[in-house]
Structures are given as C-alpha cells and as structure tokens.
Length: 382
Ligand SMILES: *Cc1c(COP(=O)(O)O)cnc(C)c1O
Image 1 (cartoon, rainbow, N blue to C red):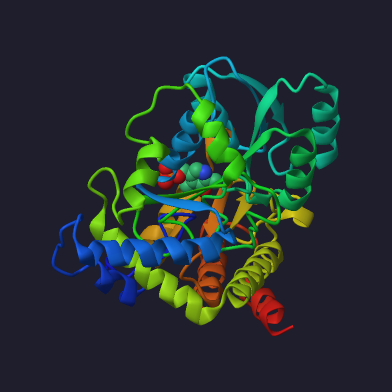
Image 2 (cartoon, rainbow, N blue to C red):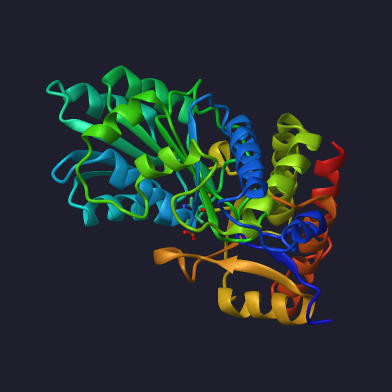
C-alpha cells in the first residue's frame, strides 16, 4: 500500500479529490475566455480569503517567488528595511531583501518565541528620520510552529509609516489574517499550504500605499513586475503563461472554502492544533513553541532523548505511512514537525498521534502508546 500515505507535513499538503479532478481537464488558451472567467473568479475569491478590497495577483511560482515579488516591487537598492524574524522563513525574507541590495537590519527572536511587538515599537519610535522603509515579518513561522500577533504589529508599523510586508504563506486559510483591518500593505500566500492545491502558485495582495511605493521602487524586475501583472489582469490575463491547471484547482478550492465558511475553517484548524499539542504532550514530548503563541497550522516537537529525528521519521513513513517533517536550519536534528493545515480532519490527527505512540515505543521510549490518542480525543470532545 505504498500509495496510501498520511501526509502530515506543512506543505505540500493533501489535496481533496474534487480539487485534483479540477486540474484534470483539457488545456485551454490562457488568453481566451475560459481562463479569463477562472482568473476573475479566483481573484475575487482570494480577496475574500485575504480580507482585502485591494489588488490581488496570482503568480506562477512557489511561495518564495511571492516574497521576491514583494521585495523587488516595493524597494530600491540601499533602502533600510527592518526584518523581524522568529525562524528560517523570516530569515529567508531578509535574505531576499539583502540579495537585491537593501540594507537589512535584523530583529531576531529566539526559536520558539513570537516577536515582541513592544520591541518593534521601541525601535520604530527611535527612527525619527523615517529611514526605515519597510518592516518584513512572517505571520506563521513554519519552521518553529509559532504565530506572530499581526494585529498589534500592523498598528505599530502604521503609526511609524513604514510599509508592512507579510509572509502569510502558511497562515492564510489556516488562521485569521485581516489584511485591511490589520493594516498590512503587502501580503503573500502560497498554493500548497492551507489552500489544499498542489505547488505552483503564489498570491500577492497589495494595497494603495504599496501601489504608490511600487511606482518609486527601483530594484530591477521583470518576471515578477506587478505593474505588468496589473495591466494584464485588467484584460483577464497574466503577463506570462500561468500554471493553468492550478488556477482551475484554486477555483475549486475557493468553492470548498466558501462552503465551509472561513470562521469554521479557522475553528477547525484551531481545534486540530490543540488536539495535536495535547496528544504530543501526553506522549511525554515537549513542544518547541511557547504555547501562548503556538501555531494552528503546524506543531514543532522536540525529539525525545535517545531518539534520532531521522529514525523516527523513517519508521513512521515506512511502517505506518505517516509522513512527518524534520526540523530546519539549526533545529534540523532537534525537532520534528506535524503539519495540520489544509485538507485535514480529526481522523488524520487521531491516526497520527496513535501511530506516533507506537513508533516511539518501538524506538525504545518508555511511553503508553495510546496516551496521545486519549488526550487528543478528550481535547476534541471537550
Ligand atoms: C513554505 C513557506 C515558504 C516557502 O514557500 P515555497 O513555496 O517553498 O517557496 C515561505 N514562508 C513560509 C512561512 C512557508 O511556510
């Protein structure tokens, strides 16, 4: 049963059958009426998910392409940007800015902790000359399973006046993200995380302030030029050939999300995340994240003493068909991660915790293998 896998990683995530099938239709002209209708519907649907009335672009690239689009369209070489990072993906956003010649000032927080908005407020209030052009931050840090308080960050950054560029790649759909209400200027998401679509698309929303900044920004850009994306979108097209099947799949995903309702969708993610944390703790394992800021999309777990992360993941995959993620960067061999975003339900979480219990016992951990399931079921029923 090699094909039967429980894909519990934070992207790519499981894809529902209706979405898979939406991609299996004959190709269409990407400059014809069928594609225009799909692109228009997707753009409108995405604005509801992003909770914005502003401009929304669908780009053919992985999430990192969306982050690169944010940088190259908003900044000029030499601009000072403040990078607020709580992990690997926060660092990547800063790396992109640095690569394109921005002066990056880092405000890093310990792995497992959320960014402290007060520290950000203090730094921005010192910048009386308004040298800082933009603040970069990740809403949900996938490498540590921690979520930042973007409502607070948004208010603080707007008071200063810098642009707020947000990596929402693993957060959109899995948790509330109110682009307009929280004063986010540029917000990026990706298809293969909570959207339940295969990899290949990213989504970039920009507000009026960002659009004005784009006209001044001097970093060279071509493929990711949002000015070109804007003029083509007005004709129901993209500047370059898009990943057509994924756009049809996005259309199907947005229909599923509309049926569930965003509030219920956020509630489902929160419930499953809580059950996962309770289950993991009942198995005697420790969470990496400060629980007050634990993510609803992914849970990072410290490896038990005496067990190598690689061995645990191999056993889980080969014997039980459960695919877990390892750690990234300096946490590579220290944690494993359970993704519970997108097309996930109670059955996935309960099965994962039960099989994790068996796997740990098999690797010599002194544990009641059923304890995780018991705690998760109690959490779901409570
Ligand atoms: C997955 C992810 C990315 C990178 O996306 P790719 O699609 O792999 O390029 C960036 N930021 C966060 C927070 C992510 O979870």
